[in-house]
Length: 150
Image (tube, rainbow, N blue to C red):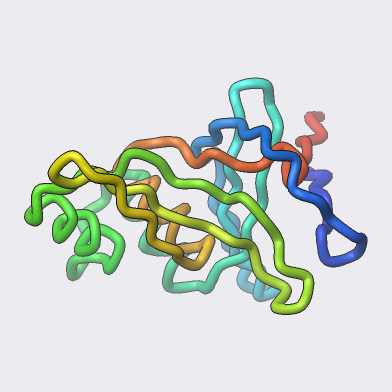
């Protein structure tokens, strides 16, 4: 399947402030091209593409397919720590793109003891935690593309 995704690095990008929930729809493991990515899809078919490393792509595959893994993935560990401390991950948001750093801005929103804690993270970590926690990632609509279906 081909994906048409916006390239916020190629243009001046402004946050829309409107978000759409997305869930994992594909893991790209293209070894020859050295392309590894997570593809998230919204209920309306919009897609968000995030490049990631080979190891993270494999861990996400293990978690998504419920395949036993040789050791606990970092993202499962983070989720276990949050839960052990009485917290719950309420939301994961991809809200911006920093053209200077060429990186998305992502944050985890954790609720613990009646308070909300916002923690910044790499987009690949946020997406991986969403896979482990089985919750959607809320992505700014300006970063959403679409899939070209055959």
